[in-house]
Amino acid sequence: MKQFEVLGTGCKKCTSTAESIERIAQEMGESVEVVKVTDPAKIMGYQVMSTPAVALDGRVVHSGSVPDRETVMRWLTASA
Amino acid sequence: MLAIFTQLADWLTYTLMGLSPETKLGTSIHFFIEDTTKILFLLVVMIYVIALMRASLNLERVRAYIQRKNRTVGYFFGSGFGAITPFCSCSSIPLFLGFTSAGIPLGITMAFLFTSPIINEVAVIMLWSLLGWKFTLAYIVIGMAVGMVGGMILDAIKGERWLKDFAARAYQKAAEQAHDSPHDVEVPEAPKLTFKDRHDFAKDELKEIVGRIWKWVLIGVGLGAALHGFVPDGWFAENLGSGQWWSVPAAVFAGLPLYSNATGVIPVMESLIVKGLPVGTTLAFCMSTVAASFPEFIMLKQVMTFRLLAIIFAILLANFMVVGWVINAIGPWLFAGS
Picture 1 (cartoon, rainbow over the protein chains, first blue to last red):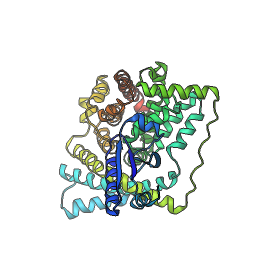
Picture 2 (tube, rainbow over the protein chains, first blue to last red):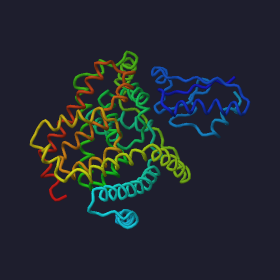
Picture 3 (cartoon, chains in turn yellow, purple):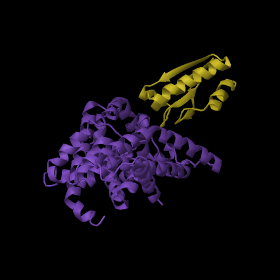
Picture 4 (cartoon, each protein chain N blue to C red):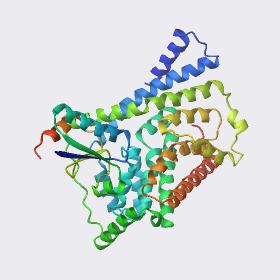
């Protein structure tokens, strides 16, 4: 199962990023785990400067905006 | 070219609605229509054009530029990039930590964060169209000065002592490394972008920014229009003239509980100035509303101790007051003939 972490200090865009990943995964019938990371120290650990950012299985794959639909689908279909 | 918006407002207000330019309601509505249409038009065009140009500017590159500068010019660059970098306030914590953990001094990081809400393309466009280039230039210089001076004071008193532990440790570590091998930071390559990439970026920016600020434009211009129509000319000059030194701190404190962005405040500023409020007092009020907002300070609590927050707050307020007094003193000379 793929594990997504949405990094962000709790703004609206971070919430919609997490929701969008969950929704698209459900549509595609993929089971995923989406965790929201709000701890600044952890976010610093990922060296991310613009949020919302997304880490897939511990690696940052996106930062600075709500990812669009195609991007999320690509993450979901990529082989782990 | 912009006269077309005056004509549009003339036609809508005086012909279509049949209001008289002699009435308070007529002037207010005319002002509201002229300014909202003009501002929204300029914003759409300019945000798109500016976004095209800065599509390749990302925070990683900005950080590397600043890291390579020595401290003296660092404040200038910190504040300057704060002005031009697209940046949402919800990113201030990760940005703060990203800068700090790269060994950039606290004062330079804060120069970035202080200037960021005060100066941005939206504020500049609105100021230019409402108050002219002289005033816009003065606003930019003052906004950057507030950020730079604030940052210098923070470093002078060694503000980094009062960071939260994990942030202080990250800064310490990076500063030591930088000491061993200074100035070897590579600026990451600008991403190669086609025109289509830039267009897509600019389109998203346009949607994002206009979606976020259109309400503020309407509220700000609405308030400005009400002031314009219903407050007699020179009312402020008679009641809150620049002669009274306390009008500046009063304006700073009045701006504190108001939480707005530059977009909402600038149309109000225009009306305040037209009605005779001294320019320095107006600027002090505007900056206090825009740059010293509690929600953002509460956010910074995650990386700073309360003591540091209080110090930063005090420095900002003091800066705004100095700006107000200085501009009130030199304003008549500075804006003569404008």
